[in-house]
Amino acid sequence: KTCKPCAVVIGLSLANEGLFLARDVSEIDRVRDRFLDGMQKLAETAQASGAMPVIGGVYPNDFYEPVHAQTLRSVEATMRGWTTSRGWKYISFLSALDDGEGRWQRGLSADPSHPNEEGHKAMFDAIDISLFDELVKRT
Image (cartoon, rainbow, N blue to C red; front, side, top):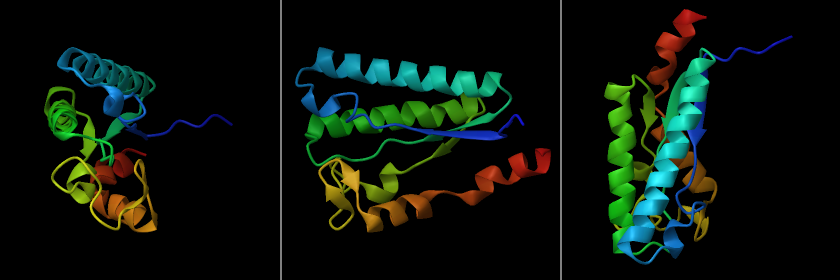
């Protein structure tokens, strides 16, 4: 039996793309652009299959410096903008996890890159379940 999802949640980390290793503006811009391009392609693929893309926003990393935090906010703004320009849904994890400087709030990380149990709970709590209401009505 073939599965046809009504929604696909896509959430990736800028740290996995190497943001925390990038030190100069051109390198940071390359990481940002590659990340955004990849997210768009994944979302377009989901949409082409008939599913609504739900973009899981960026999240902190304790290796980030202030310039990386600026990039997180820029990327989040771009992806949030897709909700109006592309009609996609967006979940803001950063607002639930960030200490204001691109790093994890105290007590939410298992290590510099990953949430612990409390961090996962904060991510879950950041999901506005009403995002899925119209999708459930379609099925």
